Image (cartoon, rainbow, N blue to C red):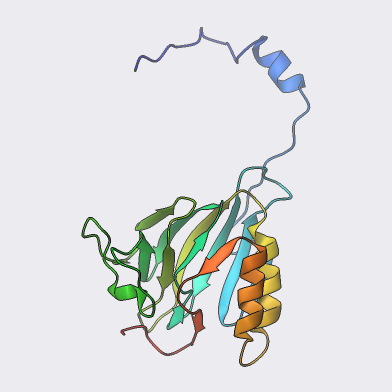
Length: 199
């Protein structure tokens, strides 16, 4: 691939004056810990950039408590990225070689891939229709950057927060919520703080 340099001082069609004169929305800059917070049971989600700002994706910082298991599931249309910032997470982003249920941590893909236990810098990319999950197998909270496309995943989080506020949460309500959002749950959501996921 060849890259072509613009002439010095050029800023696209019409030069810098035209680029700066065009009306555009301001961007967003946030300091550490800034952004609205939402409790999903024991898990905390901090909104960074949501559908009110981006037409492409919603971005969150998520603190995952020990023992939390989101359960394997599939999105009909959305793409997701999970990027570990602190601690460790078990990450799944493949279809099992044979139809499976129960413990997704033991799944193997058709190519022999297994679940990754990833520390800081580990990433999972999930295309539409790909089974995926994350859990915290350790004894300390883990922190990750989570991005969901298209934008608007915060609306799902807000509905889920209401369900998880009940103890115990209503599994049928979670199933109905996920159905409305084009999500098929393959294994159960387990918001069990303190129960490390060494299963």
